[in-house]
Length: 436
Image (cartoon, rainbow, N blue to C red; front, side, top):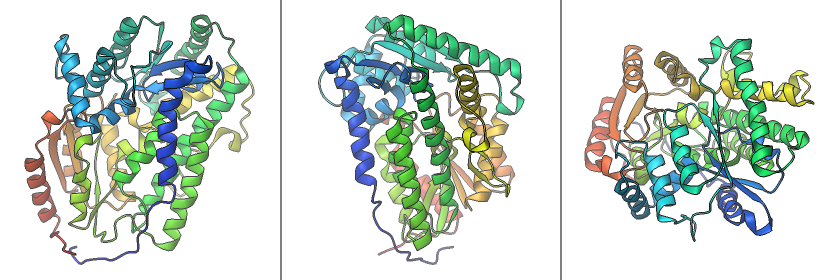
């Protein structure tokens, strides 16, 4: 496995545009009120097509990607966590939540100025801390709040009663939005936003599926800066259009044999959020010719998947392409609920074996040689059942290693120790450091 490859590689042409879109997103939120617009806050899993029904001048701040951006700025991240802990919040809580709370507590916005106060909270509850996160924010900022419960069990057990439960809450959510903002909900804008979200999340899955090819056209470190756009505003026109452009570029890279890592020799799969302060870990893997081709987290935090006709995993087909009319509010709300309830990353909250099955599927279809599990102390939700996943992967005969860390709190990550663990794992895979 240690023979050196030398594939052609080149920078991603859309890299600059992705960065620009991300910067514009945060600027739009900060400046929303300058022209009478609205600001709202919730998680990256909030069903953001609903607030889009209030108008084109409504902008969100999604908590996890905002906190992850701060986590990369190690000094500010530490100040935020210190501020949250100084008022009594425990260090073992979600590190994203503590960073976000600290930013509010300090009244400092990562991108300059004071923290921009939201006009309302619109949140989806699936992770253990989601509602408590924004309940505190709503209390501090004194704004109205709405919470949508989507914990109805795994998608393969979904029935009409469970779907009705979520759909009815979406109707309640519209009533909340109108009452709390004084605006009339626009069904046409909402339906357009739902279609955009379906396009974005299906297309992101299509993009990730292209990494099944050798050499991989994208590496996971790069993919972190691309999937994040859907975590910001998956129901926006700009996000859906960008992913269509990105799909075309990545497909062209596959056709021309352009590699993300020129010396790709071994394919690794990771899991959960990485330690954002130490992304150089992925570049260290490349010195062994190892490329991280993705993970269930990267593929399915926002990607929506289904079985393709050939039995492989790919982006879920769009309802209107299957002849389903999307013209009235109730029909679209029901389709929207079903779409989100099928999200692969939600399934393991109900049974870790479902996650193990999906991870092993990625191992097979993406031709993965080894798995690296991040025992992420910063996220109780996505680390739920991770040791059961490790046992299942090992039982299937797949080489697997685990390392301890924290996505947002650098105090929980021992770089020297993890590097030594990586060295041992690479040796297990038959790899040696490659010199230029």
